Image (cartoon, rainbow, N blue to C red; front, side, top):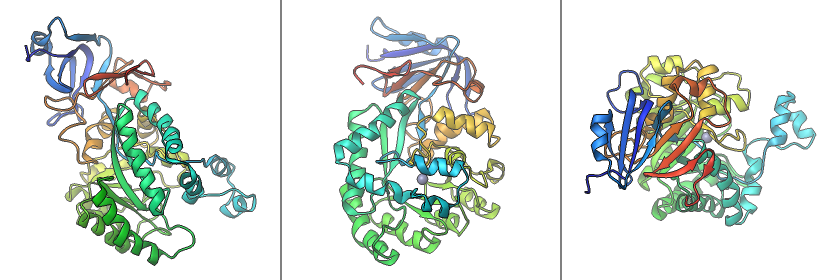
Length: 418
Ligand SMILES: [Zn+2]
């Protein structure tokens, strides 16, 4: 009887496997069936492959007329923060200069939300964050990456990483934790002193604590130089933290070369990266993570262009970049932007939200596609064709969210036991 499935999803209008070897990027199977056992995918294919696994105890969900896909992997967020930058958002919409905004008492930049993040007790910070993460779950995200970087001191950075752990233990979502102490330089110190603190105290401690899996930095004019990022990411590697890098978002100062040479899992933003640098990333197997949400939210003067990235052979993932400067929790909304504003095909955007997102987190062996042996993170969309994800601008196109083989959300509500 151990052969029998716990759950079967039958007769999907389109089953998007997103597995290896698909020549259409997403592996569409019409009339596809999936069997789940013990929280993992047991079988995938047509009726004949899966139906024999149904027993009296198997839950069967009929997906007729609906798309079935892997859960979305949101591989770049700063979802743990306190406070808001709504005043800055409207100042930018009104086209106020930075000086004019400052004159009117409007604070700008990432340091705006530093104090609220530092001041909130951990449970309050958890609650503010969990509200956003619940919204991510009902919108189909089954794995989210979450960075620190709004504390920029020992206590507040560790508090953010601790919130990551609480989120994963209390909500039906996998949380991949990244230490981003090099998100800025706090007031009242110099960059040299702060880097010394990061490299010699904080990063070794975070590595030891097991509170993060990745180390990240922000390589851009006015933040950290390429050589500074190299020092930070090498400290991360020495502490057992794999590198990721924000680079090329607002200027190009050589971040891609550092990401490629250090074997980063991902290089994120990429608005200003020249072709030669994109090629180096591709050759090094780094996943490119351009961010449609931030380009939209800040009215970016140079929105990223995926065409040269694709031509250079870069695997592309997309993500919400949920943060105070881009308050977005919805991967479907990001797919709309990726297609309509940046010219991605629906297949490219879906791949970028599933298996490529998993690659950007080094987890492609367990998540991101519907293949036997992978975690049963599966979505049933309220849509009949995969193209509709970027064509129907719905509140939420995701009907059922299955996390580790169990229904986590249905019709925009978290399951009672989730
Ligand atoms: Zn970011």
